[in-house]
Image (cartoon, rainbow, N blue to C red; front, side):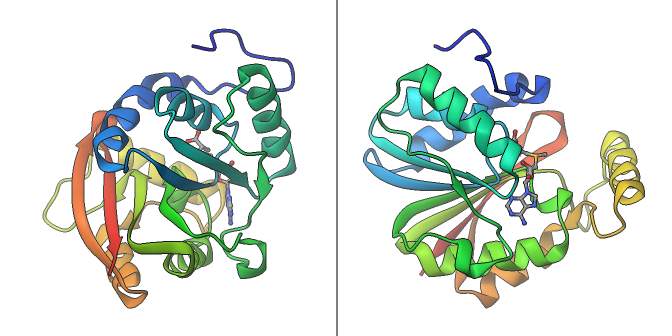
Length: 205
Ligand SMILES: C[S@@+](CC[C@H](N)C(=O)[O-])C[C@H]1O[C@@H](n2cnc3c(N)ncnc32)[C@H](O)[C@@H]1O
């Protein structure tokens, strides 16, 4: 376990809280040997935590942001883990920035609501391109859902996101699911997570 925050890295308090629940969902749902592409890795903490816990998984961290890539590289160097690849610059909305794959899974944690809808469109198109048949797109974050009361905390989070950028905001899960389906990614599972988040899984046919 990497306890200290290495120089050049960032550490988010939310990651300390959600990384174990996310790992608990991933562990039984990833093949024992799997290539995983993470879109929007941020500081890289999830990448380290999962790669350390699942040695059969080869984890490819990415982000659009240069500072995030520096942080991921520093975490990776400090960890000494051999199953985490050097970070790549990937803008979900730019197909040219995606690696060719193939990957058994694409994981995206907390990006869909903190980016314009074009990023989610690019995520779905990209996942459909790079996933193996039967491969899974695995999302984590807060959503709006018809027939489900939105938690007060998520409503105020939504308002604060929109005030930072009108193109950001919590997405309706039905819109995300419809977009996935349009790319041949079939809804497979919805898992309630702590703090009113969801993990949502889609499978490539
Ligand atoms: C809230 S952070 C989440 C980081 C990390 N997944 C986590 O949960 O700790 C959102 C991340 O999305 C990245 N991001 C935003 N738009 C993106 C895009 N179009 N393509 C790839 N990454 C993007 C940002 O650079 C940032 O690192």
